[in-house]
Amino acid sequence: MVRTNEQLRQALSELLQQQSLQQISVQKLTSTAQLTRGTFYLHYKDKTDFYEQTEQQVIDEWFAAARTVIAPNGESVSGFALGPALRYVDRHHQILTVLLHPQFTQFRPRLRQRFERELLGFSQHLPAVGTDEPPIDIQITFLTMAFLGLVEHWLNDNRRYRSEYLAQSFRQLATPNVTLLATWFALVGTDIALDSEKSLT
Image 1 (cartoon, rainbow, N blue to C red):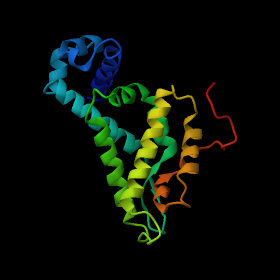
Image 2: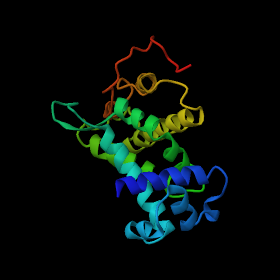
Image 3: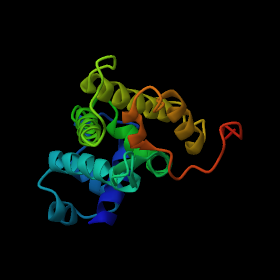
């Protein structure tokens, strides 16, 4: 199943370089992926089911790759490890670029909702927001949109910066000094300092 989905993802990426989503048929997908239609229908009801399952799989894989344990108040809770998270984006940049295209109307909202849900769960392990701090929903929206916007810019910019540098830059901007909620984005799996080599070029 995993190998079949990987082959179909690659085929989808290739086909979308020349055609719109509506023009891509199951026949074109399976032919490009060098799979039989029978293999396709063994796993998916139709093309829409393939797209929906692929979107969910990519989100689940991304969060599984980034899963880490942090202890903001001495209590162990799940965090989001920026190093592995951005390395996942780097390795799977083709399918993520495809799914972030406006033709895939459900992927962005699904991804955003997952980040918001995880951050909301994390916020429940933190001290209550003070009266001089922005409400938790504003903090969650800000951090979610900032991170996803940065990832999308990185993809559109052909991943010009190293993933480790991007991780550390994000945490410099989304600092726990401003909001404790930013500690969910853990600087785990990054080994280079900010003043070291920034770019792949």
